[in-house]
Every structure is written in C-alpha cells, then in structure tokens.
Image (tube, rainbow, N blue to C red; front, side, top):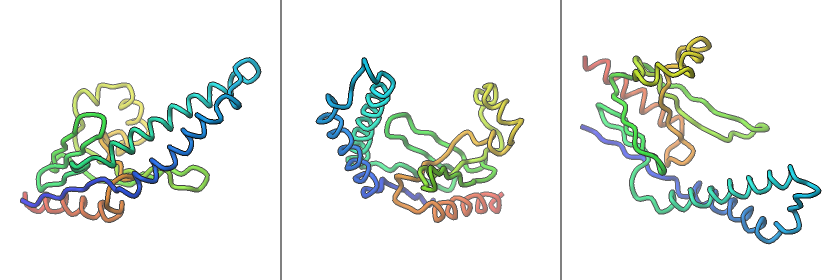
Length: 176
C-alpha cells in the first residue's frame, strides 16, 4: 500500500510570516496616529480588525513553519486532510466521485487555491443542513463537495496533486 505525504511549503509560510509581521509592527508603531475613534470610528474599527487578522497570520505561519507532521496523506484506500487548528478529516477513496479545482481571484491575483472533493454520498449530518439544500438547487457537484484540500500551503503544485488524486480514483474503479 503506497502512502503519499505532503508537508507544509516553508517558503509560502515564511512569506506569510514576513508580510503579517510588517503589518502588525506597522500597526503597533503607527497605531496611535492612525486610530481616532471620535473622528474616524469606522476606519479605526477596520484597522483593529485588520491588526487582529495579521496577528492571526503570524500565529498561523509560525504553526506551519514548526509543523513536522504532514498536512495531507493519500493512501490507496483513503485521503486524510490534517488541519493546523482543527481535527483531521478522513475520506474513503471509494466514496469519491470526482475532484475539481476552485481558485479565487482578487483583482486578478490568485488568492486561494483549493481542490474540492465531490462525494458520491455526503454524510447524513451534512445533507440535513440548509446550506446543502440551498447548494443542491444551484449545483449538485458543489453541494456534494463536503471536503476540500487547501493547496496554498502544500509542498506540491495544485495541478500535480489533482493528477495524483484522479489516478487514485481510476485505480479504485479498476480494482472493483
């Protein structure tokens, strides 16, 4: 049984740490000049929220940089998606119908890369949610995509990972 492990891309994690640190330290040193709750209440609240967001970016990047365990494991029978902050998710290969790429763009820049996993049969709890019922009216493949693989911080290119995953599905179909 072949097991493929994919780890954190240290360069991407370091870049997140560097950019977040610049904004956090800039907020610390320039915060008293930029924050004025009496004259600019809305802008001050947005700046504080952005400060917390970039502080979380520092924490996340440190967790990713120090992580020794894989973020994704692929075997012949299952895919295990590990998260830095939550519990892992295990998906059986024989319950997977297909994979598809979803990329988000902000002002022409690719900001989020994911591979959605379309399941043959999503879990019962998931299918009872209003969100699933709403999505199933719009797009059945999207509604059946209970899980996704965040590829931004993995040490493999998104297209190469998609080829590996599709190969596992073909192998699973052929072995029946």
